[in-house]
Image (spheres, rainbow, N blue to C red):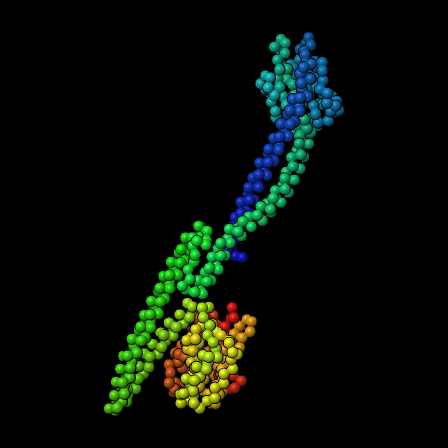
Length: 448
């Protein structure tokens, strides 16, 4: 799966978005938890301050006196982490837990309202300090301070953050898996569209059913249908023009051949030879154009037809046997009954016609046609007992228009046309040394 994969992009985008969301949630939830702990501590200190405030008075000198102390036993244990202190200009009283220490000097505070702040503790690095200013009888101000150690709250925040991290990490995995499932379901219509495109490739007249796909995919299916219609029309027009051009040239070529014979009859052999070469070149171009049209038609009709090998081979051999060269040869056909190959009978006739004619031209005595098939592929062989070809000349023989024997008739198109038609059906062609001693042309098609 490459970085260009739509599935990978969607999965990566979903996983990244979920991760960012959960990271933001982690920060927000830890902050809310810290504020919740702080509110609980403030509420607890406010509750503990009520008895002290209720029993607070000033003596004759203005020093504070507490008739009632908070009931929490931690106030009586030195360095317990929970403290109180009452201060006036005339003196200060404090909880036993402060021992010989004082709370930080009070900050300016509004009368009657608790103020909270973090400060350095008497025995701890940091305490939550709650301060309040009261005015008692005689308009004398009293500052009340309560403090609690922040270490326990810090540990609670750290433990909560760690557990929340583990939970959100597991949640990220679950949500990423859910996103992967969502992406899979979301891309399922594209898989269905891919199958429909296979059918379109196998049959040019096939069209994608817009109603079978989601509305989001409908514009794509319509565009594909329009493209397929345009492409089919262009190919059909091109094939017709090629065929019309080729057939239109046949009559002028026949006239030129007749003129060549007339010129030769009056002794113009050199002129006739040049004219014959020009006619042969034009005929080769016509045959090549017709072959291209047939190969294009074969590519556009992949999978639509199957040709019976034995029937086509017998028909081709019966034609070649009537020629002067074919009458002197023995043709062997070894094809299982009922075996078919991809393509129409006309295409297979074109292939076998070119190969059998070529084999008959070079064979000494025998030409053999074999066909076989298994679960994975089907193959067709045409071989002879002629001189054969070396490896590098075999490669040259498949090049369009390349003739290895310049003395005989033909235009060097037979093997190349056969290769075009075989490859148009997804097959391959190879030239090898035959067991008979000559050339073996092996064609292979996948059974799928």
